Length: 147
Image (cartoon, rainbow, N blue to C red; front, side, top):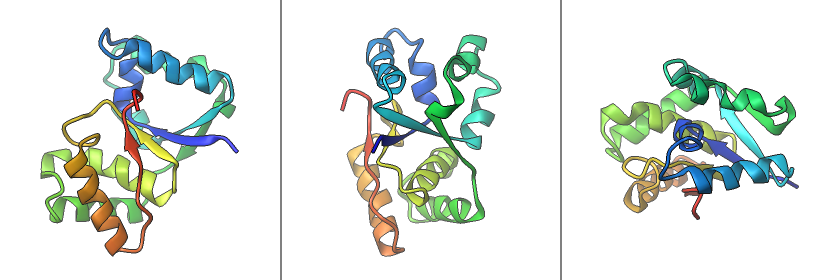
């Protein structure tokens, strides 16, 4: 069974970023080789609207069967709000929390991100998982593509 990897906006942008390009392209090569499936959300679509054209259009270069689409649900909004209420991160990181909540609820294998401040951060990951376990959700694996 293919590994299901939820990608956030930083992964799409990382494809064109000098610092993250090589590792991000390697992740996309796993997608092309049918080793993984990317789980993408309507929130990602919204965040890409204001991105540079090459970033906006990147995912369109791949067959739609390489992706599993999920939507931001009321359950995910509530879970994201709890992350903020529990001070895992501040209110300005609500969108990041929504990505994590969607990935948690949809039981992805891993959430991939280059956001080291609010997402791929050991203290934050512990916080997200503490909330998840207390509320009956599974723990979520959060990693950068380097991991």
